Image 1: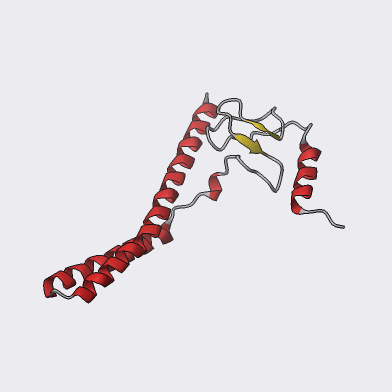
Image 2: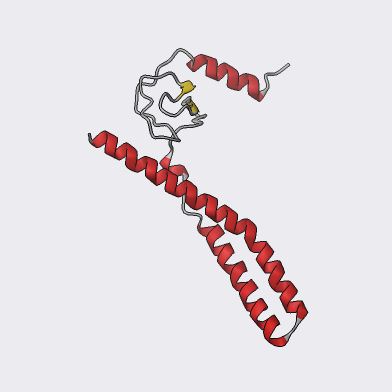
Length: 139
């Protein structure tokens, strides 16, 4: 009988349960410095649950993990451009096939637009938290 992944996670969390963070680690949501707090706890500033155990790092500010959603923005632009071109040509020539294709391109662009929007929001949040951390460390 082997241990499941959840059993291993629980054992690893129990190993770090009594330990205190010795270095500066920041809350993902508000940027609060979690140093001197337990590895597995909740942020006293905003209530965000975090796990600073190595290889877990859940709820911890990791600025390098957020990138510009270039692929989603490009896919959105491509599909919206296709919808625009087919739509204009379909309306000018009264061709329903082109209008239907334009609608398909438009529908295809929606998930890419949503992912690009979420990626940009996540990037803006990460930069705001990084600025807040920099201001607090500068004081």
